[in-house]
Length: 480
Image (tube, rainbow, N blue to C red; front, side, top):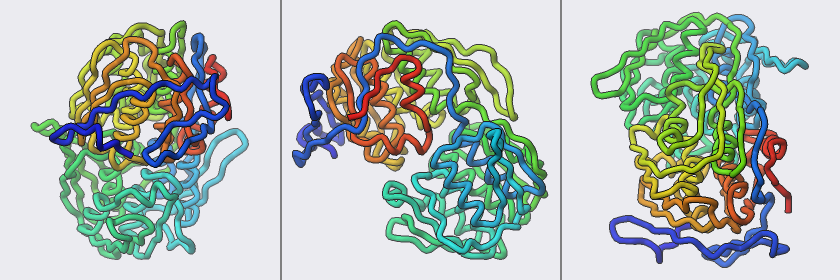
């Protein structure tokens, strides 16, 4: 919750740090909330002497969702290697099974998807529960919109708070109907159209999820569909559609955006997909190594799609000891090893145009900024208000509790770096947001006192085994 007493005029809020509460001195660590309710930590991260080793991170979440969905829409058997076996992706797999696809997990870790072909899915007998997965529900809404049946969607408490209007609007223009709660929130029903219409649609905000929902709806639509995005967003859907044999083209625009065109009703052919390590997951041990004295870490096989590497660019601008080594390709995606060594960081400025390439990494970038010399400003953060939580507010609140001065606007954040280890010593409420949870556990490894989080269950939605992996390289994470 926001402390309105700290607000400045014109929508500016400055958050100044609370006094640190060293974990070692309290049997129950508590962070005072506006309602004076104490928060007991589920997991606490203590200062580490250094993080060292060679690791891999789980498969890319965005690519994993798309591989399952396009495999289910293809003819034949698609084999997926390195699929992220986390709750979000498993929810998508279960939903596709309910829609008629056959999906099998082999003992060697390979996932096999027997597709139904474009337009060949069947009406599900049950409500599709996507858990915490915003990507899963939005992409599947698009897929279902041009099948002639009704599909009901729901999710957990966090997902049911998130708005779906930006997806619903283009799907309704294509002929689908939606029935939803107020604010176009889950649970909702997509009533697919038997006669979908090709459209040209300009995204009002840069969103890879909305773009992908339209392109998936376009698969079973006759004619050519065009999606125009004002800023280039991650292009995993376009790359994978081409790999499955769809007629898709991408054209740069003079205004810096892109036009993506897809010819509908292709026959997608099953293919093998190799999923690289998720750069959004790699971001957490990577930044932990950069800000924890005595660290040197190698993260192998990370996807470095140029529309996903904004964090690496920002860290480089901050003077990070970061090397991108052994560039190569796997499954149609660029891959590399990331080598990080601890060292001083300097504040930087991140423009709104750069944010789409690092939208999921903003919380951990803010943690890096908290350890830097100077004030880092990040603009264009309005999208963070409608993620798993209000991430902009959650980041500002958590940093302030850990001894960092921050300023929060409606769509921007300024982090006044401490020039070294932040105070720490707080328990941060995560509001069921996996990236908030991991970001503040990373801060605890580099802080002067431990940092706790109230709930770590959501981490499993994207990074199963996070705590164990961090422990394997020297982090000190302890349960309450």
